[in-house]
View 1: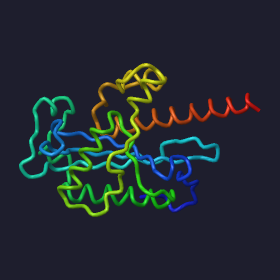
View 2: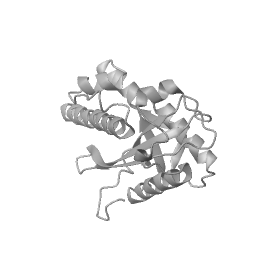
View 3: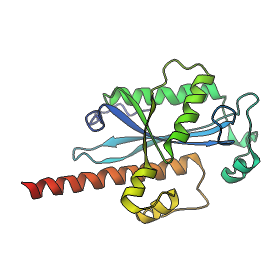
Length: 213
């Protein structure tokens, strides 16, 4: 869980929203019919200069909900064997409640009003999170119902690239193809990119203000 230490709250940086980087791995593209199999969430910290960095990653392997669809092509891409005991998967209600509890605590310590999902093709991840929330009848979903921060758009503006691997390489971060399509790996790469975009803007903004003065 969140370290019980003094932190610089993020509240003032994103209009009271807490950016949380999320990646999901699924059994397909339909958030209501296809299984949610993995969720990873990266929480961030901000320093006295206003720069963001990765703080901690949380992840869950999730059992398919009853009668969930799982497209063999999707499973081939992400390499997940849904019923393997080696996954140590937990039921969807347990995973989602724990996930939401972590994020609600982060929202509180950062003095924010709610979380906003950061993702690569973020609406995809948000739709699966909300669909799972509805399935388990969660009453305290911390995420904004529709707004997101998408590294696809940010990457297109900064580097003219939209593919996560190409963006990571363009930003000088490297890319391990063998680790890709793991929720943790993709979420951490997305988090590194998001922090890079925000921090680069922070530096440029400060430079522009210095010139104006």
